[in-house]
Image 1: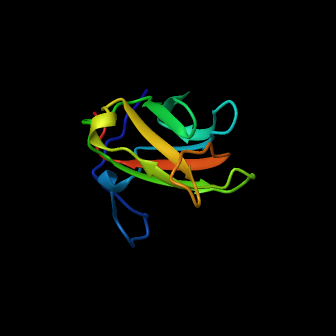
Image 2: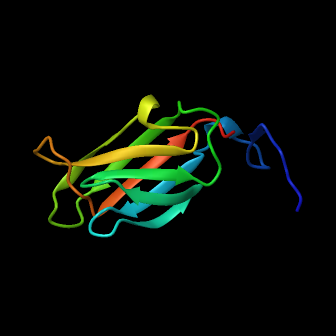
Length: 125
């Protein structure tokens, strides 16, 4: 297999040039209600349901450190009213995994979410 390595890329006709560092290194769309399942993803090897509204993901290709950026979102596709998602950083993450939680719209307690997403930015190992 051939490998093409670039630091920057852009359209052949000119225009905006993008840095390879700015590309998301992983993303996941998952259903956390009932039996938690990944609907679609990139660079996500597995999902572990760690209890009500608590999820751990393993990367297919590890990050360089436990410190990377996580952006999360939930959708309200069911009656669970899960609408707030928070992600853990540092201590509960590793170069190979990250953790996130979903919470009820008007509560401070974890709730399973039928629709949730996470995007990871950082450096791959």
